[in-house]
Image (cartoon, rainbow, N blue to C red; front, side, top):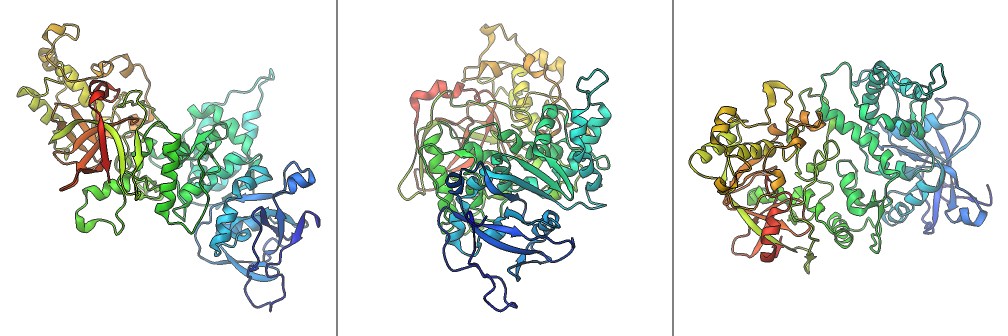
Length: 634
């Protein structure tokens, strides 16, 4: 050990013992890290005593090692109070309670433990060192002997109705999965066993561990990982085996009212890093996949996924001296070099909110409406509040036509057809030039205060002779309203109070049949606007699928804006809109975007996405591709 590790010169005891621990002023080499030595103690409640060694990451090659000869800790920093203390060379250093609990649990009675812990092995106050050391994290977690994932302490009674039995139950999960019947074949899990596992999963998936940005990288990159929940040890391989039953799993607390939405979000955060271990991701895919997770430093929403992403010819260097906006711009430029699509425009909630606020309410920094802010509150999920509400639906949380619900009920949009993006960031990094078509505009904003008022307005317009240039008949219009209410998701199963109808209130079959011409009798069809023919009428696709998670998401109830366009389409947007907003489809964009022209300017702000039934599969772009032009977005 003396040849591979060497004593750190960090506060090794030369100073008076009553002073706090201090890091050495000497710099670590770029390939050098500190490793914590957790000293043994027979008394499990004794103060934690440690030392620090220096270690070169080149040692694997120099000494022919298969792995780095220490472990790495994956954990949530958590609350800073009450302050806890560990002793390094006998000198106190403050750590968070969760880290203190982890070190107590890991400490061996007789043997020292070598482990890398970011909060101690990196001088977090030294920005230059922090930047350098974070660059080494993917090397550390991918090549250490084992990653220890600390889920937290267990308690006899908790808000999730008992994490002690949950930890014990999941600790015995391997026995469930390996059980054989009398003939030696794998035993099929019973409904009761699935019920128990789902109850335990609720407690597991409620833990803060699963919502931290860094854990995704740490779990995905690990060669071997152990999950430690109190004193219960669960092997990563056990969780991976569980995924083969993923269609039968859904975290459920037996003592709470059931919310599919809440459970689906929790379960997605749990299984996502497990499933990513077998996938290769671009930077955009990694950022979009982890957009709902949390981080203390907003720059970590980018830096925390660099170890997951294939950057190709692009390069992003971790540097905490840069502003958050600069880091996000670097990431966006890298995405534009890698991707053919504009999916990242669907996470620009910060800029969109600026668009509809009054001038006096705008944020201090004018954020471009085309630049994703990966730290913005519109992307985050606060389960601590949601779990207090048994009636929680996706409602206020639905922010993106393209992205939301995709993990639970995938739907493919292709508004620009197969066109690749044509986009450039202009000098000064404040404007984006993007090519597309100016297809339509908002003409009427519908009343969405009552669940069915907007569809009654649509019916009234039809009765007065409007909308007939877009819809063949009332049957087609009714179907468009049904799909619009669900942002394009097909399944129309009704659940929950007041029927939560997914068809509009004018769905009287006798009335509709009287007003409906035959879909095959084109001689009497007067509509002429571009329309995705596959989306014009209800088909087997709408009825042959079973109930999906989105059936319970109450998509009809979420806050949004319904509108009629100048050309007679029915649309819906998650963000507030105004009459006159342009409906544009950019090359490489999968959904339409609403733009608002700036006063006395040729530039536009982005209002947000829109769902417009009939043009989500490329019909509008196909009809106007030759009329494409450039838009300047600010």
